[in-house]
Length: 102
Image (cartoon, rainbow, N blue to C red; front, side, top):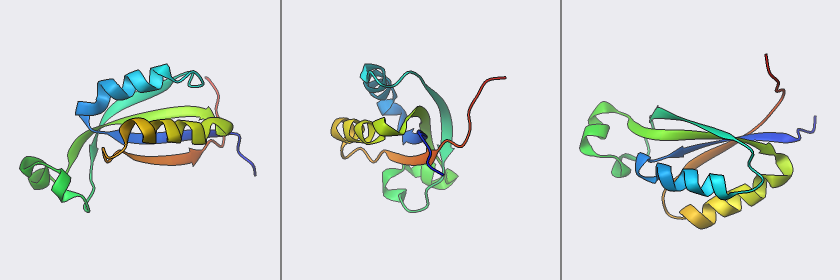
């Protein structure tokens, strides 16, 4: 099955949240996105966590979800890499199997 839409899930440190929002708002092919504060549990990146975060076993981050046409996916990733290189932002790309409104 060939999917024509993608959902990009992106975890950003809170200190980068405003800059990330500004960046997404400036990209003309993004119609909308959502964000939510999450607790990230990443056992492999303790050096990037404060002592309190290491003790708690989690790090506060902001998760952005961007729904877009698949033909814009590489453009989005390139723009974000260009703007946020070296910040450690983690992302996942998921195919959208269905979407709609109730």
